[in-house]
Length: 239
Image (cartoon, rainbow, N blue to C red; front, top):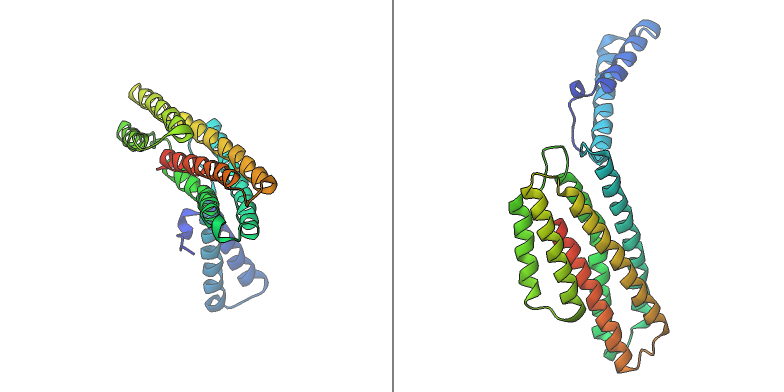
């Protein structure tokens, strides 16, 4: 728990003052006793207020704050679903020939579980009106996406191509002096929602497939790879 200066929090000072006045006037408590108590209450109040303040999103843009909060809730829901799928996969994939699939599913689920924390970090970087995304930040994200593109195939390649188009548009917005944060959050929301859809497909197929059939295991591996790729794209947007 981080300390906070009560002087920066008028409500905390008010609470301490009330304790001081009530203690001295009405209960006739010695000032040697009541002063430290009032100070402790003011400090504790400041710590609580600071903690609540740090949890609030303040982007000086109510619409943007609402969108970011929505994405955070979407990511938390995705994390819960990923946690369920991870537990199911441990129970269902027990043979040595299923080990590769188990590893792939659990890795994709672990990445999904990390998203809420990373989105919290993103909201901190977006804090305040002076936190517009810079062209340099977006160009770095675009370089990373293009680097991934050279080694990608199939669905993963299509996803990264969509991501590069999004980043190119965000760079254009930033160069025009517009707030590219909203486009960034909308893009992130799309990736999170798509991830939820693929995760549901993976869960459904895991429950209904013949897990001793190599072809069906391969199809599950492809879905796991698709989910992992989406998580990586989300992380790139957050980075």
